[in-house]
Length: 136
Image (cartoon, rainbow, N blue to C red; front, side, top):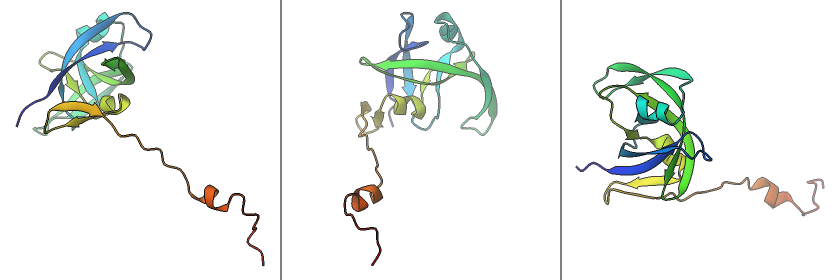
């Protein structure tokens, strides 16, 4: 089984000029993305909370979390980001993929546009304009 890596731009906000390029391992099983702490601090991203995370071996680690803006081929989206510590490798998680409207094709090891669906209630459309109040 191959691993999929992709380089994305990370900024503190959509309008920020200061950015870093990060080579991520794409892990659609991870919820949040992870970027090394020093890189996040260098572009002005600050943590606002601490969360516990389960690792594959069952152990628990605590990491700080902030918010970042991620860009891929000119499209962007905001998502939570874990402040990585020594030994942590950059990961691109599901929340970031969703904010970018991307999915991972594991067979071709590519990021592809997500098919977006907007659901609508059918009750308003079926009763609108009939003039029938239901009384007999």
